[in-house]
Every structure is written in structure tokens, then in C-alpha cells.
Image 1: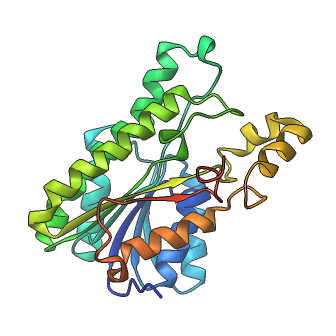
Image 2: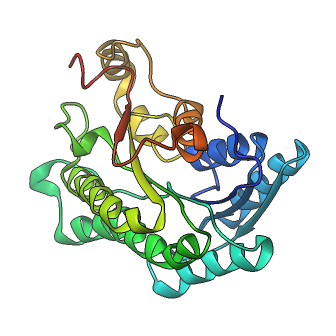
Length: 256
């Protein structure tokens, strides 16, 4: 079993969905969590949920991780509050999806900014603190869209951005090695979160049934499915896992 006792973890997008689930799981395993989100109300609710279970968490919100100032503010808050950073979980992202012939350049740029740039900026801000700590781990949320095309939901910009996350993670392995910093990624399939619920609803009953049925697991993913994997990767139990991408999709890629 993974154990995060004594670890200080930055987790982005803790206002709900996978970020909230990760904050709860990391705190249950003993980590001090510093979250962030643009959604101040949701971020505060997550802090309350963690504290209600006896965990330690603080949050920076609202914060814009697409700016150097926002990312630095988040990282510095963790250092000031807890003395350093051991784990960076780049979870937050916002995508624009739609048919290829309807994807605008603005939508394309939006996805690259909110799915790839924020990973770069947050990692850049946290990096010197991970180095000062003598090592740590960067966990990046990629996606199955970075591996395969999608039949049910058009994800051109989303897939391109997440493909960039996968490649960026590999580069971090080489850069982090001299400092004892690991870098890994997680590629979730379709996870039911507040962000994806409208997309799932738009499929209609038949579309939802077909999409769930096409998954070998027979269901859509839950935020907790990803949070438990992230907690393991963040722990010393995964100390020899470096550069890997862990697919959490119920088997879609293996048996499409």
C-alpha cells in the first residue's frame, strides 16, 4: 500500500472531479495538500471535506495557472506554509472539443493553453523547490486522447495537447534524474466529472450506453479510479517508476 506520510503535495484543479478525489486520497495517506482552482467555491468545499476527515489542506484560489505569476504564487504558498514541495500533480485542464471542421483557431489555442501550457508553467514554478528538497515526483495528467483517436467525441485540440503532455513528461525524466526527481503521467479514459458530464449528457441515452458498452470494464471511469493511481505514483512504493504513462481507461486502448 502506498504511504504519503510527511509528503507535501501540490495538486491542481482541486475544486472538484479528479482533483478533489486526489486531494482526499493524498490527505488520507498522510500528505499535506496544497490545492488550487479557478473555482473558489469548489476549492473551499474540498478543503472543508479534507479537514472534516482530519487531513491537512490549504488552497490558493482563484488562481490562473496559465500565467507565470499564478503558478509561482501557488508553489510559493506551499513552501511558505509547509517548508517545501515533494509532489506536483498537474491535474487541472480545460478543453474545447467539437467536430474537426468546426474547430476554430481560438478553440485550438485555448486547449493548448489550458492543457499543455499550465503543465509547463506549474512544473517550472515547482521545479526549484523539488530540487531544493533533494528530489520528488511530477505527475502529469495526459489522456487516452493522446494515444488514440476518438469515435464518440471529437478531440483534435485536446488530443494534441495531451500528446504534448506525454512528450513533455519524457523530457522531464532526463532533466530530473540528476536531482532525484521522477516524472510520470496518467492517461485517463472518460472519467465522469463536472467538466465531462455535459459531454456525456449530450450523447443521449443510446450514445451513453454504446460508449459505456464499448469499454471492456462496462462503465465510465470515476475520479477515484485516477486518484488511487496518482497516490501510488506519488509514493516511495513507486520509486522505480519513472517516465511511464499509466493508462486508466478500463481497457479501451487494449481492446478498442
